[in-house]
Length: 186
Image (cartoon, rainbow, N blue to C red; front, side, top):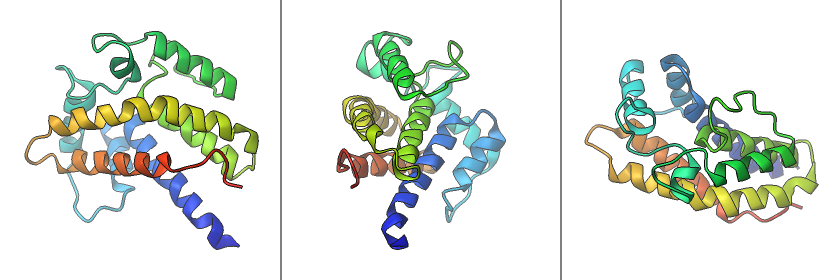
């Protein structure tokens, strides 16, 4: 019976790694999150931070903005209607967000964290009634915009950006696997 839960724990672990990578706020936590993938090749902490900033932060315009609103509502705006929709979903699921009004709720790391919490509650704590909300959040929101982020980032890829390419492939693989999930695992 324990083997039945192994794929679920791998699912949570992959999601946790992705969440931690996109939520990293220092070069050290970014490197730790990257290294959690147990890669055969390594990258210098400073080089990884430079790549991450070039792709997702700035100071120049990032290659791929990490906010859903840019892909769903308006490529020039953050904190739009889709952000408010995600905020209401978080309230519905009881998701506490300590950075409210500091980092928009539709940031990729925040959304991956919310999705992680939904899966954790559903699979580890057996709170099955949240499966409909998880299904909706993924299929009607996450799966709508994250593939666009991946495509934009892959299109802006340069030679030697293997670390970011790896993470984007991990995210893409995770999204593909999640599209086959049902509303409930029972």
